[in-house]
Image 1 (cartoon, one colour):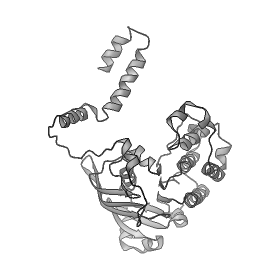
Image 2 (image 1 turned 135 degrees about the horizontal axis):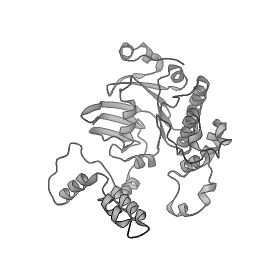
Image 3 (image 1 turned 90 degrees about the vertical axis):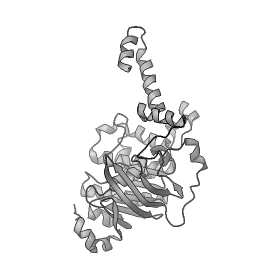
Image 4 (image 1 turned 180 degrees about the horizontal axis):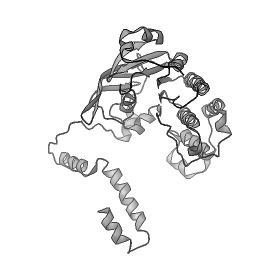
Length: 322
């Protein structure tokens, strides 16, 4: 339909591309689940029963302000019997997990154990089939990614995810605006000059960022992009940092530097962190608690020394050193 309309409008007026763009934006905003999803919504509004394998789990933005997010007395984050599947394959199989306040937790396990999927489930990127995820007392298994971010969860992805076409400084400024900037401030130049204590502290940890402020983020090396993305997460001042293989592609020296930055940032923010990492030497420096995942379940939990002695862990996982 778009192709047909575009072909007609192209000859009728000069700004046909703008109209096509507006239609695309409207479709994405109004029908995020496509025409089938729109049909199902209309059927529900008409009172018809529509079968669904995964229950709809979305909330409206105004609900965020009414949620009680006071810290739980027992844990900052907890999973209770969480199950996630995709394409008929079970990814998480009744996962139970508790993350305390002020602790650096490390996830380890063989590939396919469910480590990254656990992050995806709690940040709205994978639908939760059953079970509950609680963060600071709020049930978040139905939240979308932006709603989770507003509650104070910051995530660093396995593959460095930065705005490649923007400068280092512009990437850091976007992180500084996250959850802070108000709509009316977007129309002024004031946010371009914002700064924060955590931004200053973070730049002190990664001195190279200060000297490469004008450089495009896409022109940085793999290691530098890893550190830039971690810096962006830290500047948002989250209560929980989700760090997916932050040392991937780093040298031994850079790995030590990153581990020191993680522990100091957690202390500065009085936050908690979950780190997915395969390097045992890196875990020894930061791990307050280690969780071994296997086939979507928690296989073992404890200190690194306890995990190393576990016969079950030895049977499914073997760590390495740089």
